[in-house]
Image (cartoon, rainbow, N blue to C red; front, side, top):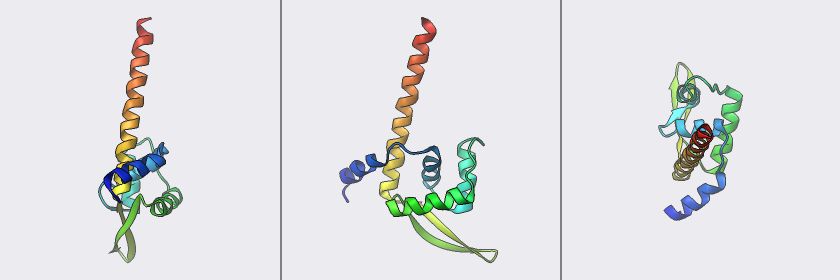
Length: 118
């Protein structure tokens, strides 16, 4: 898939739910499920906690959509941990959603400042 095809397809996933956005954002660096949950808490400054059921359901959806992929498996304390990472399509979705959210916030700030002067 070319870069322009990736960008075009990425737009079809927008807007994202906050949970999906945090999962994808967390996967800018490959991680296992528990690491994703911890990073979502860090990224949201403690506001969002993703439970295991929500996380693993979302990971399955994101794999099927081609936004993330399983990269590896690690053995840790007798448990196998699946490592996930973004695909090029997933990275494009994160960039597009980030731009959309920045524009939305800028519009809100502009509106709030205009209303404060009235």
